Structures are given as structure tokens and as C-alpha cells.
Image (cartoon, rainbow, N blue to C red; front, side, top):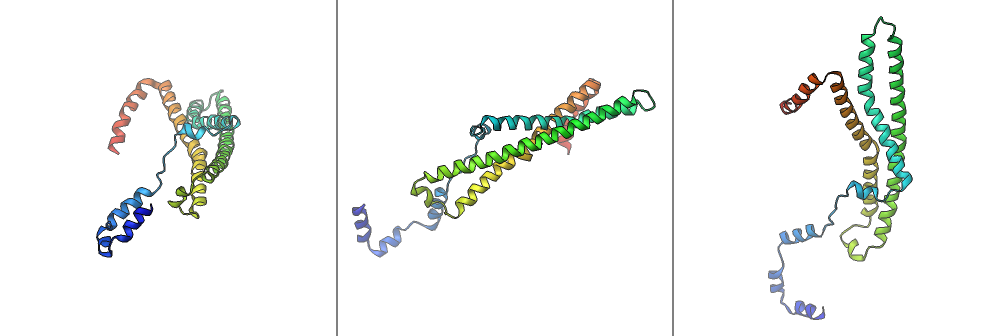
Length: 208
């Protein structure tokens, strides 16, 4: 290191100016020095969860599936109720509709309670893990980061994970359950028409 410093000092000012790399190379070096953020898989995110937290996740998924199946079930019961107008079994259809609505209420409560609790616990655990990792980093790791931005980065990452496991994950499970339940109901009521419509869905999607 001392030899290199002596060589640099021995170089005239004119040569130093000529050997200075252009600003474009400096921009490339600064860009390369920026930290690369790698995306984590669902398995990696779930690896930090405990057994009780995984039970909360399973309970939230069950609630989301129930909520997703409410719409096709309500359509089926409502259709039966319309067909039974003026018949003795109309009261039975009304009771079934009431049961479907109750099931939807229970499922929504279970989904919201379990998934929100799971997301809060995961966010708190990730904040703790992130802090432990940051404390163990060397000085070179902090050279490419601003100290004031580390807490903001921590909170932003934890909030993203919490939002992903909360309403967004529950909505995705609801959508999948509702789509599969609707397709199953369509094939149950009339598989011929359901098959024709299902085959026409890609064409309709392409025309939109």
C-alpha cells in the first residue's frame, strides 16, 4: 500500500489528469457498488414462522376458502329459491341461504383474525432478524448505505411482508377458491354448457 501511494505521488499532475477515468466509468462503478436485493421465495419466508403461527396461516386459508365458496353457493341456493317460489320447500331454501351467509361471516372473521395476526407476528419477527443481521455486518457493508436509511429500509421491508401475508394473500386464496367452486358448480348444473363456455373463455379474453 505504501509503494502504491508513493507511485501515485510521484506521478505529475498532468499524468494524473490524463489517467483519471471518465465520469461514465465512475457512474458504472457506483451502480455496481449498490446493494443487490434478492427476492425471497415463500418457503424462505415461512422458514422463520413457528408452529403456532403456521396454524394461524392454515386457519386463515380455511376462512378464505369458505369466503370464496360463498358466492357460488349463494348463486346455487338463490336459484333453487327462485324455482321454489310458491312451493312448500321455499322456507327450506331460505334457511339454506341463511346458513350460507352465516358460513361466510364465520369464514371472513376467521380469515381476517388469523391472517392479520400472522402478518403482524411475521413483521415483528423479520424486524428482529433484520436487526440481528445488521448488527453483525462489517464496516464495508455500511459504506454503500446511508445509516439514516437503514431503519426506513427495515420498516418498508417488514410492512411489505405484512401486507403480502394479510389482505393480499387472503384475497388470492378467495379468488382461487371462488373460481374453482364456480367451475365445479357449472359442471354440476350442466357440464355440456359449462364445457362450451369454458372453451370460449380464452377467445373472449383474447378479444378484450
